[in-house]
Image (cartoon, rainbow, N blue to C red):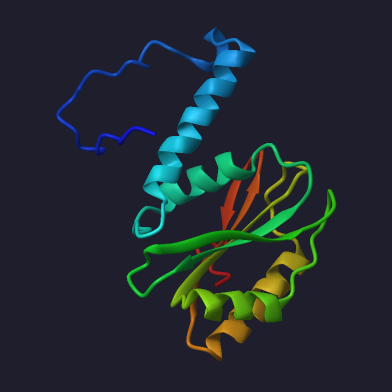
Amino acid sequence: MQNVLPLNSCNDENQFARINSFSLNAVEQTTLIRLAIEILELRHRPGESFNSPQATRDYLRLHLSDRKNEIFGVLFLDNKHRLIANEELFTGSVSSASVYPRVVAQRTLECNASAVIFYHNHPSGDPEPSQSDIHITKRLNSALELIDVRTLDHFVIGNEGTISFADRGLI
């Protein structure tokens, strides 16, 4: 993989300025998605700080967009919100995934994380959190508070958008 130019690079040339999604064939779209994921993974590799909620949303949306089953994952962060690990902990059906606070707490301790960001997808496309999503987030947050780990956010990703629990005041 090549290095990514910083966002404030002096290179003003935009090779993609005249390209739109309708002008790309299926192979080109797949290649562009793969390149975007590579760029976002470089920006979200271990040791990188999570200081842009929008970049995190974009990364998670690309990461989960084609999944047919529900996936629940955790971004484990250090005390400066740098990524330690990104792990998909639970896989479910098309409409739900069982999430176990004990497993999340165990992995958090194993990673020596100071903070976490939860994420999961809704294969239906609608990112609106369910009551069960809100309930499990509260349970996870309560469990992690006991071991002095902060829950920064929980993103729900769907084809129709991304919802942040922090933006909604649910965390």
